[in-house]
Image (cartoon, rainbow, N blue to C red; front, side, top):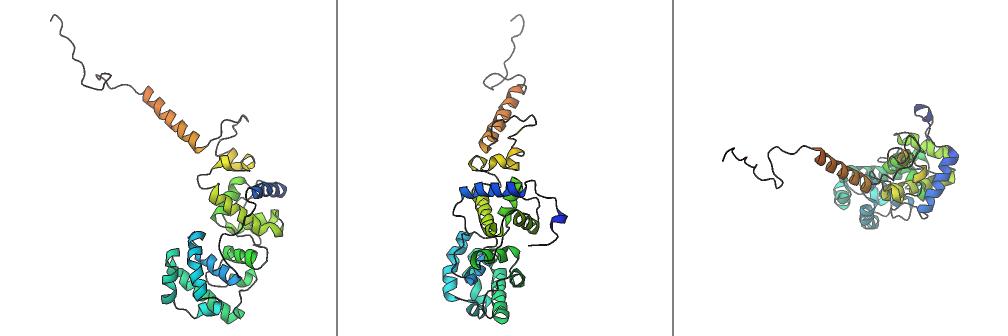
Length: 276
């Protein structure tokens, strides 16, 4: 857990007790929350997580079976070349950078860790292509060490609900870890990630959220609670569209008609000359 980070940012709006209650309720919406990457050992999960950067888990899961068959461990992967590796991972995007990270990681593991994936944050983050998020994924899911990965989904959802208050992943990690017991850290991340992918998207589906009544975003940004404390209709995307359409129609009704045009929009009527 990063030290001294809390002093740089404001504290979360929710208390630790509120955060645990919210996560318990949100966990009920995702009772089987887990990583969606396929793996059978720490090495495979580390490779898959490196490949998942800017790529969907589904795409990574299509690539890794053949990759793991050809390179079943760090020793085998360290013997590969970028020319051999790049075509196999090209579909995951940024394949040149990822191939360098994978080969560097495997070489480091073989030379300094006897071919075994290290089981501490301090050692993992020294490997090429491995940051805190990737290290926490491997620690929590494959090595049995409490870890709370913070990706863009965790950042968005935690800040919207109010259980975290920062745009810095390390600060959010610390705030969530301080509120949740260590044995719940990994599951907390998995739950928030799934919620961010399925419900709390950039354009959220608030009507499907089990914790919306306790969510700061739903209460304020979506305008569900007014200054007088009266709850208007939920500000769903459909309602917003309806309000926009209504406003457009009202503007049209208020707009003055073009002078000299008839009901059908045709040519202006000609006045009869007097005395004719």
